[in-house]
Structures are given as structure tokens and as C-alpha cells.
Amino acid sequence: LERGSALEVAAIVDPSPERRARLAAEFRSPAAYGDAEEAFGAQKFDLAFITSPPGLHAEHALLAFRHGSHVFCEKPMTTSAKEAERMIAGARAADRLLGVAFPRRFYPNFADVAALLAGGGLGSEVTFTCREGGTYDWPVASDAAFRRDRAGGGALLDKGVHTLDQLSWLFGPPQVTRCRDDSLRGGVETNSVLDLEFNNARGVMQVSWEFPLQSGVSIRGSKGELWLDGGDIRSYRRRNPGGRWQRIPARKTWPGDTSEQTPAQRQPGNYHACFELQLIALVRAVLHGEPLAVDGAQAALVQATIDRAYELAEPLEFGWLTARERMAMNAKHWRQAA
Image (cartoon, rainbow, N blue to C red; front, side, top):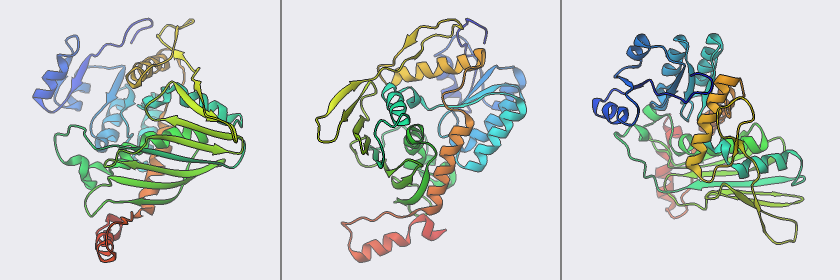
């Protein structure tokens, strides 16, 4: 990385020769390695992107820190708060940056609503309902994502890291008071429901790999209501008590280039544009010392919240089953079998 320069992909690492070749073809002649130790032994890198399975994130991040690289880690940061703290300690010891990929931090409507809530714009007695769900359709190369010993969790660790980070952005540090999920012995949850409390708000969060929920966040307070639609990042809806809903265009923008002086401002129009602004913000953090959108400590807070949810997990009730079927299913819940 150099001031005023673009980000250059110097090397890629993948144990599969086929995937390695396919990925290398997307960039301008990077070196290709089958193992991370080999890559760091052969070259020096300013920045390492960790996109391996979550259970390997801590190992790969710590390796990068030992070799002097900054780290940008795909979500989830890892599979436990203990591993997250190891990564934070490694970054601190190496005096390197540890960023975590939460592109939703570049949703302009959430940024505006976070500012509105911080200023007391909804008044007191704030409650919320947050839902996100759809049928799991991500291409997989193995069954690792559906095994608790390999993945660490399911829908909550996959979708829930995003929604928990967004709720933390809006309301501050969360506390889990109840968790219900449908994970059976040896498997991971496809549905999870959390009761959450914050210093100034309380509500319910639901995530699903199975049901196409009406994704979004509904927020209610003494001064009105807000609705953030999961499919729209450039506006939100608001209504005062007894009034009509109004669409409010988002105003928040971010630097759209890496120049140090007066960068052009941009507002993303879709989710993919958020990835680009996230990378720009990352480069600006490395070159100019600007804060990361989400650093290791913020991501570790989300990880600790998920850990606590799994500690409290109880069987999710399925009302269409008979009493005997519910008893049999509950006996197979992963927490019951632990």
C-alpha cells in the first residue's frame, strides 16, 4: 500500500488447486499458495484478508500479525469470544489493525437512524422487532456449515452477526435475556429467536435459514415509530403518534476515494456498493489512521453476545407438533444433549 495508490492483490491462498487457479485469474498475476504459512514465509504483505472458514480465522489472523500484516477478517470474526480476544491481543502485540467485514455499517439509512436515536428522536420506552430470514441457498463445498463441531453455529452465527451488529450500532451493547433455537444434536440452528435488552431499548430478534421473513427493523418509542426495510438501504419510514407514514431519504455519505485531502463523498445505492466503500474505509484506516467501521473490539462484543445466546439456548417450540412429538424433539435439542 502506498499513498494515492490502489490496493494490489499480491497473493492468494487456497488449499484447492482448482479454486486457486480460478481466483488468481480474477486479478493481475498474483502469486498463488496452497498454505498460509508458505505465503507469509515467501512474501511480506501490508494487509491480509482472512476469508477462510470461521473456525480458522483466529489461527490465520495471528499468523498474519506475527508477520507484520494488518488484518481484515470476514464475518463472523470467529466462533467464540475467547478466540476473538486472542485475535485482539495478537493485533495489539503486533501494533497492527484488526478490522472485521460488516458492510452493513455503510447503510446510509441505518447511519441516519443511529444518529436520530442518539439524539432522543424517538423519546422513551423504545422497543423493537428485528427479523431477517430466507431459504438457505448459499453454494457449499461440504457439510461443514451444518455441523456444530466445525461451524460453531448456524443462522445466528451467519445472519445474526449482521443483525446484532446493526442493533448494537443503534442501541449500544446488548444483553441476551432469552434464546430459543431449533438446533438438534450435532447440528446447527436454522431458526433462532433472541430476547434482547439495551440501556435504552428492548426487543426481539429473529433470524432464519428456512423461512422468508419480512426482513427489517421496526422501532417504536413515545415520539413515534420507524421502519427500516431490509431491502432498502437509502431511506427509512417514520410516523409520529397518530400520524401517517412518511418516507425519509437517507443523507449519510462516506469518503469515496483514498485521497488524504477532501475526498469525494459517496452514498451507496445497493449492498454491493457498500463493499467498495468498506474497502476504501479500510485503506484509509491503514494510510491515514482513520477509525475502522468495525474493529476487533466491536466484533468481539457481537461474538460474546452470540456465545451468551448459545449458553441460554432452549428448544424452539413448534406449535403444529403434537405434545408427544414436541417432547421427543426437545429431547434431541443440542443443549439438552450437552
